[in-house]
Amino acid sequence: MGNASGQWSGGLSRSTDEAQELLVEASLDLGKAIGLENTWIWVQGLQVNATSNAGKASGSVQGSNSLVAAPPLDRTELFEYAIRKDFFEGRLRVVAGKQSASTVFANINRPDATDDPRYEVSSLTSLAFTPVYSMPTLLGRLPGYTNSALGLRFTLQPGWFDNRSYLSAGVFDGRGGLGAASVQTGLTSPSLSGPLFNIMEVGSGWVVGDARKPGSFGVGVWSQGGESLLCNPLDPQQCISDLGAWGLYVLLDQRLSSFRADQDSSGINAFFSAGWSPSITNQMNASITGGFTLQGPLEARPNDSLGVGLSWARLNTRGFLSEAFNSHELMLQGYAQIALAEALFLQPTITLLPRVGLKDAGDDSLSGLLQLTMLF
Image 1 (cartoon, rainbow, N blue to C red):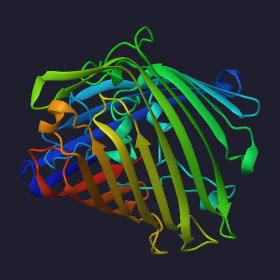
Image 2 (tube, one colour; image 1 turned 90 degrees about the horizontal axis):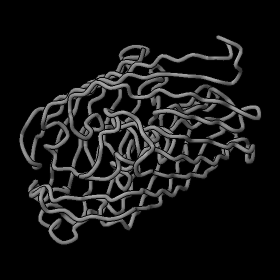
Image 3 (cartoon, rainbow, N blue to C red; image 1 turned 90 degrees about the vertical axis):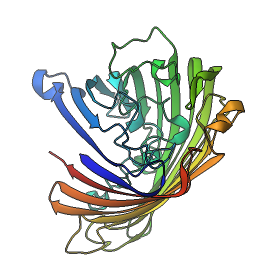
Image 4 (cartoon, rainbow, N blue to C red; image 1 turned 30 degrees about the vertical axis):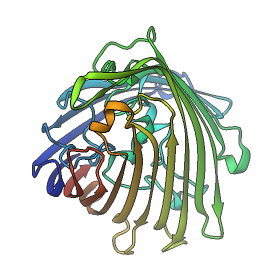
């Protein structure tokens, strides 16, 4: 995946920036390989390269370009290596190793499946802004892109409500969630000897009508151990500290209509997520993200999609932080994802911030982004 972005008005600067990501995975089914049934192992490599101003020119604190994460902006890392074991006919799934917890927890973009493969939704949105991939109140806390972490997680699916109910819980290396005191867990040796990050999520799903339109919800709670630091971006010597942190979040999605109910997963999907944390070292203490996706609007082009999204966040302006942050940020984004081939997608995107998060940036920030994605 690669993109180039340009800042057209407002924001911090009129720069043109680039970002690229390459993710490669190798996996092995140990049941087929050596007879160890219901067991899998995998390893992932990640390469990220971004120009120095990528994702910053808009003035957004939430993040207008999801390919850009915490420095270093150029990194090569062993992103995941883990083992998964399923028990009780798949009702209990246990994963241990270095992993990206954000693919399982607080993930509004997770696949939404029904009992008919024709109606599965593999991705609820292709918005390019960060809040759909890392909830603002969990940004930097929950292990994920690009800082995966050693941990243990399990998912229990008891079989209630059409086999779509679940309880997921995990404990992870929490050194990456300490703000200015964080360790780059994606680039360092894995460890569980320091602060820990704990999270639990429960949810379920349903289908509506003869068209089997899927929907789901999730509710989660998290806690972060250790001493966190939040420093003034204008003066890194000014910091506030907090011993421990916690928060709550909710997720909700629903397919609203189907374009071709008897053929495929085309239709209009809606999604919503919200988070809250009382921590004095969170950059953002509350957030709301939502949007709509039109999947396959044209029968001749079922892999195309259109989408719009909105993300609002309340920023931490305690004390000296009011010098750096506005009280809140509002970001709007729209995109068209065009399938050039079976696994090649071109995506033009426009982002508007009527209210930027960084105080030095100009409101009505308007930028454009062009992204190319290839699956292989």
